[in-house]
Amino acid sequence: MDFLTILKSFVDTMGATVLLPVFIFIFALILGAKAGRAFRAAVTIGVAFIGINLVIGLMWGALSGVSQALVTNVGIERDIIDVGWPAAAAVAFATDVGLWVIPVGLIVNFALLIPGVTKTLNVDIWNFWHYALIGSLVTYASGSLPMGLAAAAVAAAFMLFLGDWTAKGIQEFYDLPGISIPHGMTAPMVPLALPFNWLFDRIPGLRDVDADPDGIEKSLGSTFGDPMVMGLVIGLILGLIAYFGEFAGAFIPTLGKIIVLGFELAAVMVLLPRMVRILMEGLIPVSEAARDFMSKRASDREVYIGLDSAVLVGHPSAISTGLLLVPIAILLSIILPGNRMLLFADLAVLPFLCAQIAPMAKGNIVRMVFVGTILLIFGFYFANALAPAITAIAGGAGFAIPENAVLISSIADGFVWSPLAFMLLGKYLGWIGIGLFAILTAALFYFYKKNEAAWDKLAGASGE
Image (cartoon, rainbow, N blue to C red; front, side, top):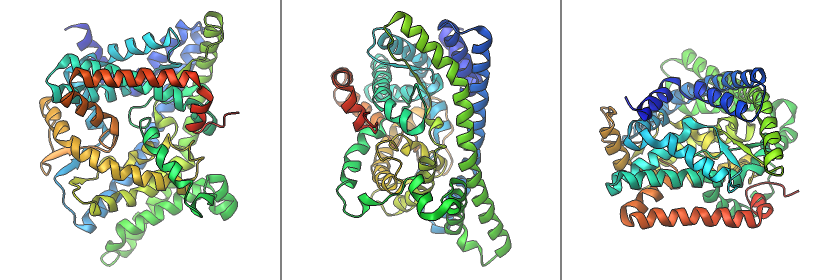
């Protein structure tokens, strides 16, 4: 068994909640942190991510029930099934590109970090599966594994740029100092959202609505504006929409399901932010060690710790927007002309899709729902276009296609423009297309470095 196979097996076995703390511990030691402090920080981060995943799992189970009930009530049938991001990640890591993606991603990161091209050290190795999926799509479209590996490398560099560009806004809005989010599912939503956020600013009346969590709390009072109560209310509304048709046959059990859903989403609104606070407790020693390390060797050059967007979704703006988009997404799946995709497994990732646009929207939930709805419309057509390729890749990787599905896709990555863009460039332009994306990424780094303050402000930073 070669090294890459062993490395892939280790990643598959450990999963994100163990792999990340291991990497953090090694990284902290390299930076000069004391072993005891590094160990405690790593364990704290691991515990926090387990807590985050448990809460997200609670949300996942609640929304899966809502999705299934809505689909059953409406009676829609589609031949593209949303199999969810865990299936997409498993498929991506099972491909030939997936075997190589971790060393490729790390080489790209260090090659850009050491000379100061990027500020982000992406420790979120588990989510390198996004690069693997992009590379696998290019390999499928072009028939060339080297081209697929090159596409994965360019994708890793592009996400580092997006992480750098959005970092200041993320740090200010979410109060996450020293953090960036180079996440392949959420970061590409920022450039796509920009023109629609600009459009919202030009809609009289709507642009003046004060709908960030603080504004809502002022309008509704400390009780009904509280995120916990908002979660309860949103859950009750979602439950009524999903289970209304069941009242005639079983009034009390249906009412019970709706109330339970409300309390589950209230719990999510309370527990996710607390898990993120535990995560930040673990990251503080690592961030301090990184700052000290760079101040001694690179004239106080900043280094950001690149993390999963899971650290963002506990914010009331992100989670409220994501939950409000659930019925909108179901409605769009019914009315959009030409849509063949049935949503199911990935509805719980909707808060992830909109989390990174919160800084530019200043946390305005009305604005985020407006922009998020437009992104979903685009997303359905991206996912429809990618479904044949994802299905073919999954079949080649030994993934069992659901019996009721002709094709498979997912909201995670399927609704994102970058995998489709890479695949089409590889298919129609070959190496020239991947080279053009590499040139675009280099140009974006260059222009960002020329005027960081203006770019940061565009992505939601205050510019102060």
